[in-house]
Image (tube, rainbow, N blue to C red; front, side, top):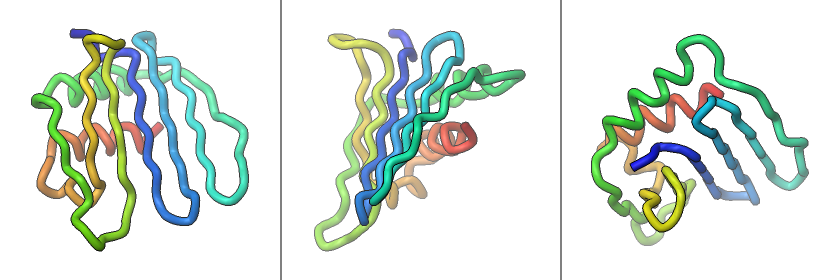
Length: 113
């Protein structure tokens, strides 16, 4: 199963949105937004950044869902690894990251982009 392309999307309060895509060569696109639009940021992961990302992705277990508890607020995220129909999809509330250390490590690497 391929880890790439990778797609990460977070939707939060006040129209906050973050989308990150990374391909197997390390090329990335970051889209952020809130009540205003921002131009996408593009680049390529340099140095040991791509190997570090691959290392945390390889430690991910099977996809699992962690919905936001009823009545809570916060960001809901989706991480997609690979292409359909073989893609692995992880849906999770970011509040669950303290319990899911492998997902937390991936989100940390993506936040560094």
